[in-house]
Image (cartoon, rainbow, N blue to C red; front, side, top):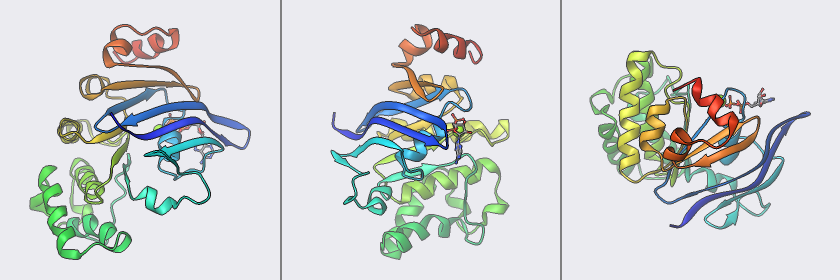
Length: 243
Ligand code: ADP
Ligand code: MG
């Protein structure tokens, strides 16, 4: 398996708050990794560092063997390989659904409009939103908006998709439709790093589970190892609150 992203000794400090401490992990082609852990443990900061939305304080992030934190590395090019889906959708309300999906590839990547629209339609169909291409985000439910956000990220043709609690802001009846889309993506071989509190989902779709606690990776293993046979006391304690 070839490694796409490898994080080495990553640290992040806000003022005097050491939010990430010596984080090491890697993601290989086609792997699905779920990051679990209590609120405040550093999960979002880790994803944001991987995406360079935050500037790490120390360590390395290697993309296909090159350290993207090296001065000579082009961060914009790296970011174009990494798709991100946020808790709060972040769609552009002045654009319709199709426009939301095409604006990035056309304006940022310089792709042709026709080619991008065809790709966007494919991904909107994949997430069950093809019938809504002319709708504005404000006309859609939260679940529909999040599915459009996923299609938008996919239209950038990323190498890896990052999801930061994509269902946490949704009404309970809409969680299932978004998890279904993510489950299909995981089965399709997409490389994914998912921060989630949906433990059943994480257990089903993930190749590996990373448990974070107070800025460190406290334990890491297969879903079977983490959910059925956790070694660390703090993993057990966390899981009893969820399972
Ligand atoms: P999680 O996603 O696991 O809930 P976060 O990564 O959001 O955790 O936050 C981890 C810690 O980092 C928290 O103590 C939070 O207050 C702090 N933090 C996150 N972002 C910032 C920021 N931009 N400035 C200062 N502190 C931050
Ligand atoms: Mg978070």
